[in-house]
Image 1 (cartoon, rainbow, N blue to C red):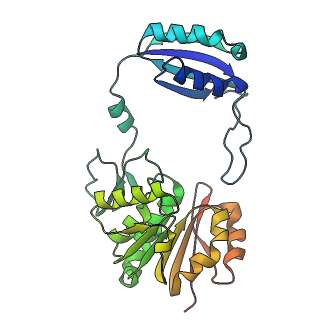
Image 2 (image 1 turned 180 degrees about the horizontal axis):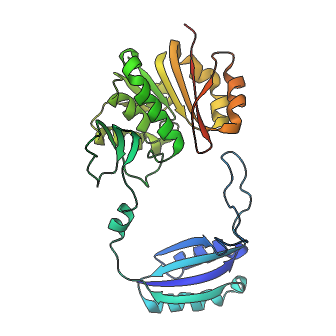
Image 3 (image 1 turned 60 degrees about the vertical axis):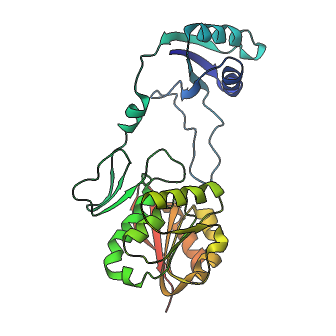
Length: 300
C-alpha cells in the first residue's frame, strides 16, 4: 500500500478528495489540519447548536492511500494538471507498512467504567472481574457508545439510583435512544418494561441490534411507540430540541416520576430550567467536561 501526501488550500480540499476517490481509485482520503499544534492552528468545530467557526482549515494535509505506487504517481500527476488544483503541492509518496488495522483500531479502545461495578465493554475485551453489570457495545459505531460524558452521566445516574428506585421502574422511556445504551442500562438495573424511541430509522435498527446482543428485552420504534406515563424518562439529545420537547417529555412523566435530561452545556442550565418550569423543577445533578445532567421529579 502507498500513501500520497498533499498540501492543499481550503478551497481545493473537497474537489481534490472527490477527484482522488472517483477518478484515480484512491482507497481512502483523510484530511488533517496542516497547522495543527502550531500557533496557526484553528478550531474547525464549534459547540453543538452553533455554526462552525470556519468551513475548513486554511491549509490541509490530505493523506491518500493507493494499492499500487503507480496509481499514486498517476493520481498526483493527473490532479496537478487540473486548472483548479494549482494551489495543491505534493509532499511525499511513500510505502505504508502492512498492519493489522482491525487489531490496531481495537487496541485504542478499552472498557469504560461507569461505576466500579458497571462497565461498557467492547466485544473483543473480557469484562473486568469487578463488573456486575456489563453493556457490550463497540466504540466507533454511530449513535453513542458510552464514551461521551452525556451518556456516562445518564448511566451513572441509573446505577446510583437503581438500588432505591428500580422497584418502581415498571415502565421506562428512552426518548431519542440512539444506540439504545440508556435503555439497555435501565433493564440491567431492574427496569421491567422499556420503550426506546427515535426519529432516525438507523438508530431504531441499531438499538434493536444492541438490545439483542446484550440479551435484554427493549421495545424499539418511532416516537409514536411512547404511550402514557412512565416512572422514568430519559432524553439525551441537545438543548434546543430538549426545550422544544418539554411539553411532550413532561407529559410522559408520571406523578412522582423522574425526568433525566442530557446533551446540555453548563451555560444552558437556566434556559432548560425556564423551559420546563411549567411542569417540574430541574436541577443540575452531575457535570463532566463542560456538559451537565439535569433531573427533575414530576410533582405527585
